[in-house]
Length: 175
Image 1 (cartoon, rainbow, N blue to C red):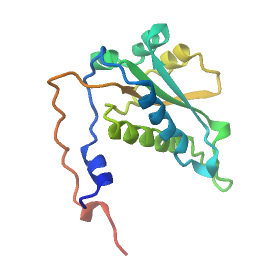
Image 2: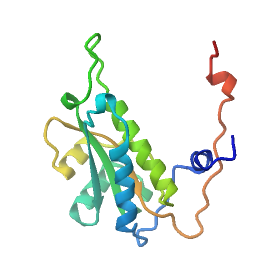
Image 3: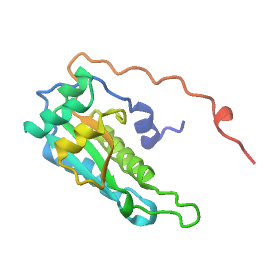
């Protein structure tokens, strides 16, 4: 990798599975993370997603029940991306709908922005969608797609090393 700030950022980013519930993320930092989601490209620039920033109170308490890990319950914020399939771009030829891809792009932008701002995250897609739907009072046509906790890891927590990656020659076909 080049000695470049972007490659350093993506090389340092890890899924964090420990959060200090007493370390709150400043409002301006949260707003910048959300701004990264707003700036993310989506198919046809449709922006078929909604960003739900949940912190404190009964909504957060309810939302924490969607995923059964103790570390998830410790995060002071949870960011959920939902979307409406009918708002997303669809391919006329085969009917492919880009909602999940759009949501992933938006979340990835926010997760990288969080890393850049020193905020810890962890991609979560294996959650109970009905718990999320009820906690956020979603409409029937709004789908919960991806979430991440937002916060700071506790003192003494050590980020794990980068997991082994396949060599580029196994991932890339060159023509």
